[in-house]
Length: 329
Ligand SMILES: CC(C)(CNC(=O)c1ccc(Oc2ccccc2)cc1)c1ccc2c(N)nc(N)nc2n1
Image 1 (cartoon, helix red, strand yellow):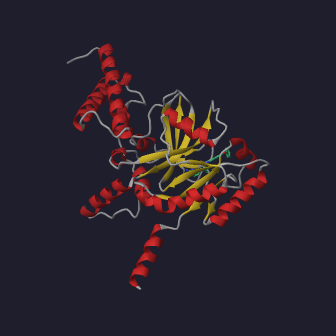
Image 2 (image 1 turned 60 degrees about the vertical axis):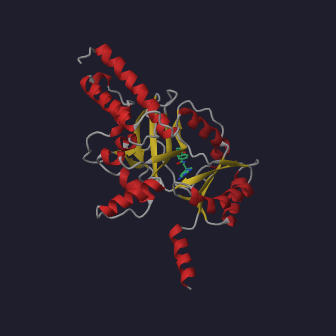
Image 3 (image 1 turned 30 degrees about the horizontal axis):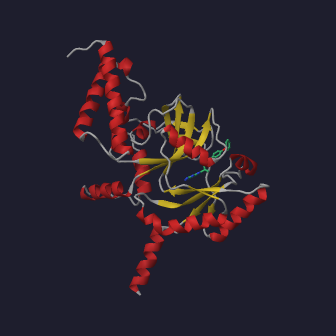
């Protein structure tokens, strides 16, 4: 049926609202209210209407998730705020040494925020007036690659925030273990080389020039920090995480505020075993000074903040090898 522009705009807005609601139900609530074929049918209808009325096609339309034509190459992007790396701690004593250095650099009590260190690919997302406009890999921390089209295919990346904020957030894109296992089974059946681990699978998927390939890889994301935020009012990192969640940005629910390093050590120990139960891989725990003014006082070394460190778990392969040795004795 031929529509005029007004009818088309109304129909496009209705389809977008319905698709956004279905996305939220399926991906965030894990409680879809309509069968997949209905979602796909409405998505196809939206794509065709937007092609017929291109003036109504906008960056935040759900139709922009399914990936366009393949790129010839990735464009390099400069990070306005560098994406820094983390110092490491490998045992309790090194955590206590970190705490001593921190308390030596500030004159008050220090509390920490502990976060799971997701074993994926560090990315940055830029939003302007609430709309997702650019996504990039960390690269060398200063220069990354524009992978916006691939990141649009990650269902848990909102194309529009709940408030029209202008900010840049950082996080870890990852492939859940079930998706990794299914992907490798399919690859082995096809005679393709399986991925060694979920991190390589996520990185390989986001480095695809054809977004339609990334769209099939069931990637997910946890956001963990702010690069820059025009109207930020938070005074603590824990507040930032709460603000990000309120905007519709997915943070990892396991983060915990700890009042001293002993609480941090207890948290870290609790996750050495518990991590097997997660449906994504982690390679450690990130510990950050919570108050932002204390972070500013402590500052940075050449490439890492003095106010954060990463407790690294022993590599899983190492554990498996040890088990093999034990079993074979
Ligand atoms: C702490 C930070 C290094 C991010 N922070 C930054 O990259 C950063 C960058 C410029 C900053 O300030 C500057 C601004 C301008 C110039 C120089 C520094 C402050 C923080 C980091 C790195 C890796 C993380 C990870 N894998 N998992 C979690 N959960 N958290 C992580 N946090």
